[in-house]
Amino acid sequence: MENTNNWFNDEDEFEKLLNKYINDMDDDSDDDDNDDEIDEEDETEEDTSFADDEDFPSGEIEQNQGISVKVEILRPIPHPNEELDKLVGCSDIKQRMDELVALTNYNKLMREQFPNSKQHEVSLHSVFLGRPGTGKTTVCKIFGSLLRQAGALSKGHVVVCDRGTFIGTLWGDEERSVRQVLEMAKGGVLMIDEAYLMNGKNDNDPGKIVIQLLMNILADEKQRDIAVVLCGYKEPMMKLLDSNPGLYSRFPNKFEFTDFTVDELLEITLQRVKEYGYKFTAKAWGKYCTILAQAYKMRDAETWGNARFVANQLERIYIQHATRCIKQRPKRKQDLLLLTPEDILPIDVPRQKTKIGF
Image 1 (cartoon, one colour):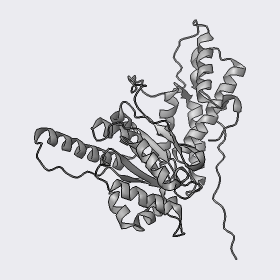
Image 2: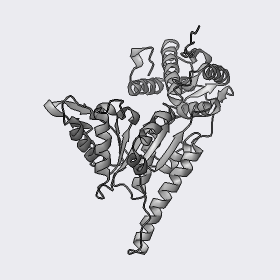
Image 3: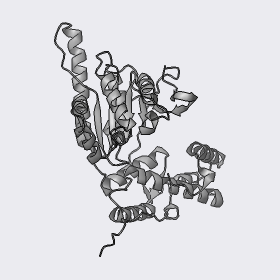
Image 4: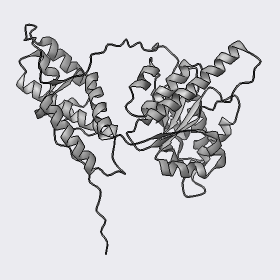
């Protein structure tokens, strides 16, 4: 993520500083409404977290020669249905996700009402197809929490891996890593990012061993309390699936994440600034809309970051805003949460490289 000032590297530290600064302001500030603000309807939502003592894995596996590999663990969220509804765009994905969870809930109901009835086979293993920043990790987190809520998974956490998680330095590291990661993901979701990188061109590529190990272990009927999600760009992911018919049939659920439109990126922007309590002035919002539209027009489709691009730009805005507030000390407490045109920095977008031909 782009960063222009190390002083505000840590978002938690930035938030603490801003809250302290707000509390230090005089309470007799002018409370008049500011008509020059872009706002949305105020919403309050209770946010209850899962118990801190819940038995989630540590996020580290051991390879040969005592080498440790860190693995990211995403804990389940308390209100997955609400988070799914709040997703910008993704209407087809929302519908498909609802259908899969509904069938899972239906099976649970049938087991309770008719214990001897034949259950519909529901495979939770899925493929997420799309470019970076299109929401694959966010949806994966919601997916795990929804399946936990439906009783299909016992924990609902997400274990995020990639090729580097599995490939070690010695023969046998792959099997050792796969078994540890699957144990770590038991009860939740194993998400393998850029999974197509496992499909190396060399027949002896260790990534191919990882894929085969996964298939062999997932074929075990005891491995029910887990969902494996393979993520990556559409074309190389489809090549990976086509290269192995068994893999294709083992992952029947395919979700395609399309690039966000400009309007959707603007909606994502408003959602994200609202999380911090910020508001744009009308002029600041107009400036932001203009430069985002220009950046979108100049984008390289192969490297465009979608929502990640928005997150990077907002971080720059927050840093600029915080720096301005510390230097100028706004007269009103509310102005600390008001983003002005001065806070909106130009966007530097890598343009598509020009091909030189003769």
